[in-house]
Structures are given as C-alpha cells and as structure tokens.
Image (cartoon, rainbow, N blue to C red; front, side, top):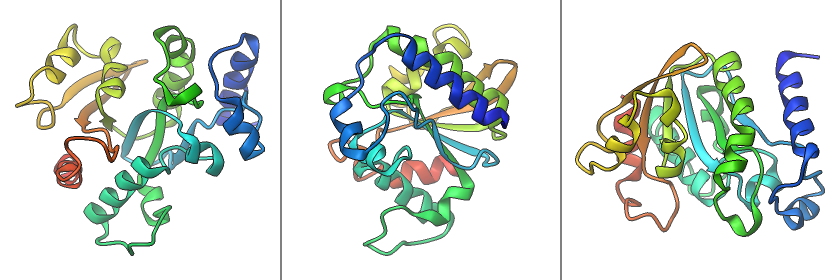
Length: 212
C-alpha cells in the first residue's frame, strides 16, 4: 500500500467512526460509498494547489474535486493562464491537471451544499494537513474564497489571515506565508469561482495574476 493509499484509508476509517452530515442521496445517485473520501485530483508534483471548501454534486458524480460549475470556471481560468483558450464545450480540462493539485477543506459533500461546521472541519483537518505537508510537493496555494482562506489561519501569523480577508484593497493582491507541519508555503486568496460571485467577471484575471 502506498503512503497516499494509507492516508485515504485513514480518512475513510475516521468517516466510519462516527456520523456527520454527508449527502447520502448524492452518493447513492453516484453509486459511491459515502464514507470513501474524494480527497484530491490533479498532481501531487504540481507547484500550485487550488484549495476549495468541499465537494458539490458534480464532484461526487465524477469522483474528483472542483469539476462542477465553479470548478470548471477555475479550470478554464488555469487553462487560459497556462495554455491558452480552451474549447467552449470543454468540461474536465485535462491539460491543466498535471500542473495543479485540487483539494478541499473536507473531502465529502455536505447536506444541501451547506458549509461544514467547525467541528467537522476540525475532524478532517489532520488528514488534509497530511496531504498538503507529506504528499504534495508544491509551494503556492490558491485559496478559493473566504472559507478556504480561513482554514489556513492556524498556519499563518496570528490574525494575518483574517486581516487580509478584511482588507478589500489587499485581499486578492497580497499573499501570506504559512507553515504546515514544518513545510513553508505561500497562500494567495482568490474569489470563490461560483457563478454567483460578485467577482465573476474578474475571476480569470485574478487567477492569472496570482499564477504570475
């Protein structure tokens, strides 16, 4: 068993240990066991990690993070920044996957797509830490929106994450140093890629600037 397989087994064991709010209807429709995590997509060798909130319906149906409507907007922005325009009908953007790691604060889909509570995020935090510190080899994290950014507060200087998000002039321009299990990374907030985001029109440009 590889180290990553061991991590996935540990996540699954934790999920089976006690119930939490997971959307069983979605997993049933996908023919998936709701205790089996969908922890990451893309490449562990990538320099960039795109870090989201949690899985949506499309992510469970397809078995990978950030592949729903918002995820496709993110993947298209990455494609445009690294490769160039992609066909309008493109959905998975496979060409970008060797260049990015895709993961979330919790590797499960919540009921009604509501954000997981603090206790559930804390419960699965050690496993996401292990993914990022022990398996991922990159150093730049694009945190997708406020919830994803705030996950990083324990690894940054006290108050730094909150202060950055609270300053609209700096929020999508400045970066933060973070140390996770001894590994130094840079965290760069970007807007959430939701089609409902007020930054919908600027999203691709902000992502491209972060990658530069």
